[in-house]
Amino acid sequence: MPSSRWRRRARALWQGITGISIRYKLLGMVLATILLLGLAVTFQVRAELARDLRQSLEERGIAITRDLAEDATNLILTQNIFGLNQELRTTLETNPDVRYVFVLNPQGQPLAHSFPNRLPSDLLAVNVLPSGQPWQVQILDSDEGLITDVAAPIFEGKLGVVRLGLSHRRLEATVAEATRRLLLTTLVALGLGAVAVLLLTRVLTRPIFDLVAAARAVGHGDLSRRPPVRMTDEVGELTAAFNAMTQDLARFRDELLRQNRQLAALNDVARAISGARNLSEVLDAALQSALTALGCPAGWVVLQQEEAGKPVLIAAQGLSDPFLRREVSDSVEPCRCVDVLHAEGDWQQPILRAECPRLRRALAEREAEARFDRHLSVPLVSHNRPLGVLNLALTAEQPFPSEQVELAGAIGRQVGVAVDAERQRRRLVDELARREALRGQLLERIMAAQEEERRRIARELHDEAGQALTSLMVGLRLLERETDSPETLLRRLTDLKQTTDRVLENLHRLAMDLRPASLDHVGLVAALRQYVDAYSRQHHLTVQFEAVGLEGERLPPEVETALYRIVQEALTNV
Image 1 (cartoon, one colour):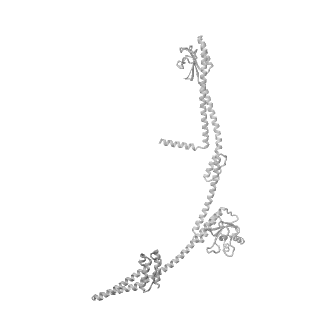
Image 2: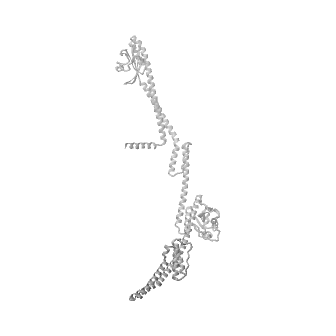
Image 3: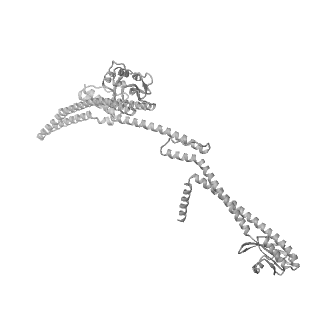
């Protein structure tokens, strides 16, 4: 849990840092660099200055102490203690850094000192000069601060030792003053650096901010924003690439909008056509939708008849009745637009026609159509062949750009496919009706044949099987009466047996006529041969049957059945 909390805090801190403006990021980095350099230089200079000043103070203390030791030699030898004290006082007055000075005899007892009262005893225990050493320096920490204590022997230590204490106050004051000046210089550099960075980042980030503003505008759909290219560096190249990208996006958007408008118009035309129930309704709906989609006030459709007859004006919208009555007549000169139906000229693309006999006649008759000075002829094409022409009337003040011409061509192709589909549907409907009528006729003939077959079977059952069964019943009754005469009984039984055989034979023949079992088991040839033999015996006719190339071959069941019925019907008609 603690590690997860620290990760969340670190992530939040990083997001906060990365969310700062780039201008202030640059400012912060430059100021931090200047501050770090200034502090590093300040601490380095402070350390080196303090070391040099300490070394200088130490060298100066050694020099003063040794000079004082030389001067004290004669004074001690002459036992001039007053002069020795005077020398110590003079040294103290002429050197402001000297805080104290005293002289010890060889036994370590003070001979003279600069203290106003008595010599502190703790000084006697520190910085003890070893024998034979020319001097010794030790830094002491006192109530007044650091003190450099210098000890030097008098006459090689035979007459005693001179001790001198130098205060570090002036040294520390000098170091502190130098540090303040360096820090002030660093602050001034920070201020100047901040101003310079702000000015520089304003120059550098202005193209970036312009680019960000343009990107936001593009994100909200404003593709007209073009940030100026202020520099030729990487930012300038990025700005130029962004402008090229937005220009391409604007072009693609316009193209998509144009395609969407075309698709919407084509969808409206398709929706209108889909509700039509015949060719006339298809053309009326298509013409009305095309006029609405293209913003045209009027139009008409010329369609080539399926029988390769003369093209006729079959649909119109926005035209007056006198104009239509005249233009549908065969006596007037047709429009040049019908040339495309004979593959004369370019019939693949719409053509804007200013010379039109129909419009000239309307102008001469001063009809309402005189306001049209041109019309667009749009071929109705399906399967790479023209079926008709969709004409859109235009006024003089009505512009018709190439985009609308392209849309009109797409509508023409769609309407052409719809017209072709409707014609094919009509042909299929007619063909289905014809086949339905033929099927009805065939059904009637089949039913008539079935009824005829049923009548024949009923007649044969009545004439042959019925009579035979009646005779059998009569014979059985007679047989009941003649039980006393075995000979007569035997003769009667023989007659009944023959009658029963004839009934069975007739029933078997009728079953064979309906559906011979041999046709399913042994095939067409054997079934026909069996039927021909039975027919010959029944009607006492000579029938010759010969099968060529079918021995051992089986045809599809429906073919064998049809051939069997044909032979059966042929023999029945004999």
